[in-house]
Amino acid sequence: MIMSELQLSQEFGQFKMPNSIIYTVIFFTCIGTGILAGLFFSFSTFIMEALGEISAKSGMNAMKAINRTILNPLFGLIYFGTALMTLFLLVATLFNSEWNGRIYIISGSLLYLVGTFLVTIIFNVPLNNLLERGDSTDYSSQQMWRSYIKKWTVWNHIRTVTAVGTLACFVLGFKLL
Image 1 (spheres, rainbow, N blue to C red):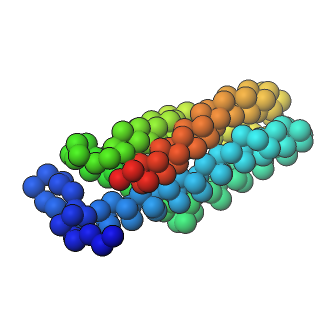
Image 2: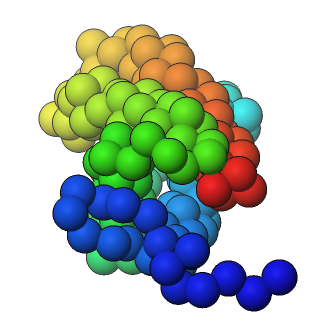
Image 3: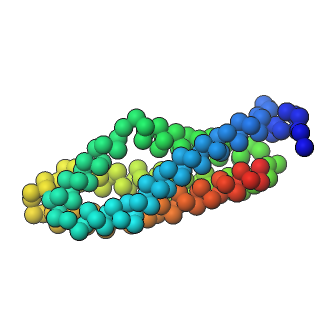
């Protein structure tokens, strides 16, 4: 069945927004969320455990290197781009009460923004900053490393679950839109 552009558009404030724009944003948000969910899943299921099995000095230095090298343009584009697209979807969906599947888009957006983006900023990044200031040869820093692994991993589990939940919500919302 072929639909006209008018049939394919939805209200967004006083403007018509073609569904093709919304579909495209959801599609790329799913890709970004999927990449990040995989990254978080990797840290939750084996990377942090592996870092905890080696010496504290080596584990600390490896995690510090990871924290420094992850701050690159491609990761920034995926991480912040996904957050911006998620925010866009939340606002667009709130302005359109007629979209089928809108509850999934709203839920996915809130899951991502709170459980993935804010958790990273409020919990994981400060822990990373604390680790960066630690001296891997100092005994007290090595003790802090053991605590760091536990706390950081708990928050990462939350990011993993919410990123996967976000992806599931967006897929369902995309299907029903």
